Image (cartoon, rainbow, N blue to C red; front, side, top):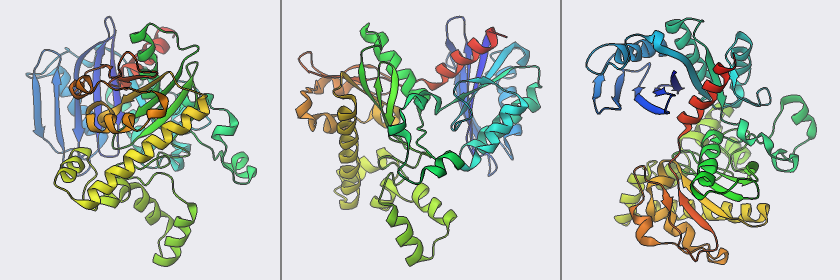
Length: 401
């Protein structure tokens, strides 16, 4: 069975084609700058690669370009799209409507559409991806939606309820939902697999660190708390997102600067975080280089980020009443050796001891333990694989049809 996994963003469409007989990736790529100009790049499992500019006015045209890449030319991997048995989609926000991965129907599309206010930067783009696949493949090819927040739905009420009048939860379902759930789900299961342990009885803290970041506390394989909230804006500071702050900052700025709700959302989501403090940088690689040059605001942004990550880990140790392992994943978690070292060396009270030599070698897709044998807490680097989780869920649902 061949399954295509699609992750549509507002101006992008990522894809991976899986052969589920051995869960291998046949080809993968990304269409970027959709609706602006258009650029595509990717590669096949046997080393062929492509990169070119092309006009991509919308997601349907982008998906048609993916069809050409997969079935025609030098990077062809299948004879026709009929070889694809199903399509799996990543959906950021399923709200309270969806508690598991589901087959796409008209009702499911309407449900995702109704949740756009909770994920205005994501859900509309995901819908474009679903509709693009329907336009190109037709309705006979089954499609499955895998929701980022579903893994977090095991949180107890004391963790997901906000301390505002309860009527707003009843009326609007305002609560902590959490995100990156597919990633946290994968790396927690992968840790258990690597160590030969059962998730039952384990206390884990998984750190998905990238331009968007979240930390999750997992007990017995179930989430008990996570840093992102109603939207992906909550938690600690990220590339361009503020993370949590005193709500009065919002009202104070709105009054002083005459900022509208939409402008405030743009300020906190796209102009804050590491970018807002440094004034220049949102990418961790650029920030690291600036710190090496001695730029004071870059150093402050980095120190704030490290401090907030440690603080969240510490709070989740309290929530879990201990911790067996900490796992780093995501673009920064997998590649920023200096961040892992700083965070762990400032958690001495947990008895963590890091093997700096191993830590410095684990990046660019490597996985393994970076803590010493005598460390009281395991510390692992595990590259995430959200696409594989989506492919597995899609296969399971399609097999049951």
